[in-house]
Amino acid sequence: MILYRHPTPAAEPGLCYGRLDIGLAPSARAEIAAARRAAPPLRLVMASPAFRARALAEALAEASGATLRFDERLLELDFGAWEGKRWFAIPRRESDPWAEDPRRRAPPGGETFAALEARVLAAAAEAGPEAALVTHAGPIRALLIARAGLSFAEAFARKIPFATALEAPDA
Image (cartoon, rainbow, N blue to C red):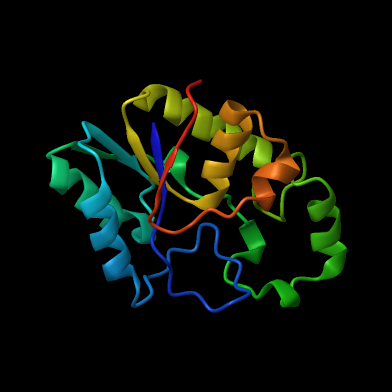
């Protein structure tokens, strides 16, 4: 399985944008073209329906003549009431408890990382080992935790580059 994070989004630094459907940065066009040139032949591209994932998914599928499927289970973490806010504007009395245990605690009106893991692992299992997934950093980290045996801290310390292929270990 090949994992791709969406291209660089048009988001100001420090913006909380898990489910917020934002556009792409000017650099995205070149990132998509480079990913398309470097992609191996693909049979299935399964992608988050978020705008920032769609253009890359469509380009990868078109390059190989692959089947393209959008799946909401590949969306980023739902940050609920924090979506669209700057991280510094989120009250610490809300964010600190969440940051202590994001796997089991959810932002107000959002979801836990455990919920994200469950839906992403189900989507990946359905897609199969020959698929390419175009998704977000959170879902990619969930797959690295489950499949590569990384700890939560190790997965979140790892940089997940934009529009770059990463091999996911087999389940």
